[in-house]
Length: 215
Length: 215
DNA sequence: TGTACATCAGTGAACGCGCGTTCACTGATGTAC
DNA sequence: TGTACATCAGTGAACGCGCGTTCACTGATGTAC
Image (cartoon, rainbow over all chains, first blue to last red):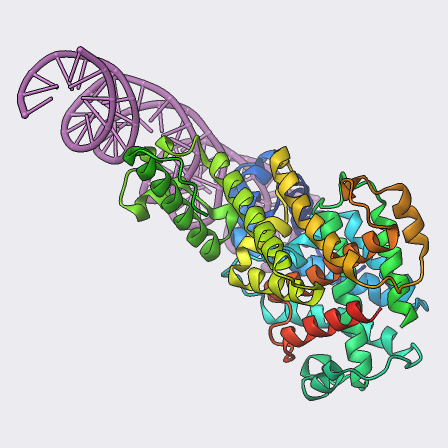
């Protein structure tokens, strides 16, 4: 976290204000959704005038892109450091869930409804594949037990996304299964589709996880 | 589809224009997302002035709510009629996927990122539970084979959402599993998270479906 | 069948709003000699 | 250590825009006698 390149006071101030802007941006997103994010509103809450923010961000798009990048980065780091500390898939799954519940709109900014025209810059895609790599590493540690499926064969021929990871197709498949199933429960929970249904979403999540680890 | 209550020409015209407004609204949502939906823009595309739309909808909120209702209605009807024609869970799953791919933004309007403050009216919740009921009916037709899980026990005590459906907990669990797993694959596919990964999302969907039917 | 009236679709002007963004500027902070 | 200059944060005014929404109105369509 500490990037001590001997910042001048001005640089320190700059990074601090940039961070403060982002904090307010997250608050605003949590309250009204990403589409309602407004530079002027952020400025007002910070007690400064609208144009002042242009000293720190080229415009609204740049700010949003950086928020998205930070979200991916945060998740990738969280999972990676958990894995580095010995977390297995079960722990990673709960780490993911905890991260998502910490700030639902942050999760949804990344994995929720995309703006039809938007294309993330390359570096963001790269961060996202770091997360995938951690997931693959964790999946590779499990004993190979599931029988090969037709989809495994398909994956054997379409594994570019694994980015050089040596895992066999069955492991790639397992990683995809983890991702889609946990996302399935999580995203419906975060979107509020379980509210009023009575059961505890945490238990459904745990049940899916058990099922994943059993096969 | 035909609701022939002997409409007067004026009523016919009215319903026709309302439908035309909604068509343009869907186009706009498909193009720029739901948050960009604007009455004025719709009016312009229809060649009329902005205020004219207020003859047909009380405001933007009413229009959006009706779009959401229509989306739920469309899905509920599609699944229900498929089931009525003898579809099993596998066919229902593909019906769901086809419906989603038909208009991704329509699916995401319902199951994607919610606007933090929004609460759907009761009748919409009811339509949504129609879909759930169909899913439960289909799940109940499968032979009971999966062993009871701890979550099943939890569901036995929290089954209000099943709305009087006589299915045992294991079936409720199966229905939830179907929903969350298919949604997991579908929503990531629609949000474009598989693009560039190389594999065919349809095959991953099929693999998840196979797995669901096997247990 | 024709006339008198009511209904209703649609218009254009207007209101207030908040948005993103630019620009010329003031004033404080840091730098060089 | 003090002075002269450059850098940069922040302001306020302004631009143009599109939004949702209201209002008083015109003109066409339907209804009643």
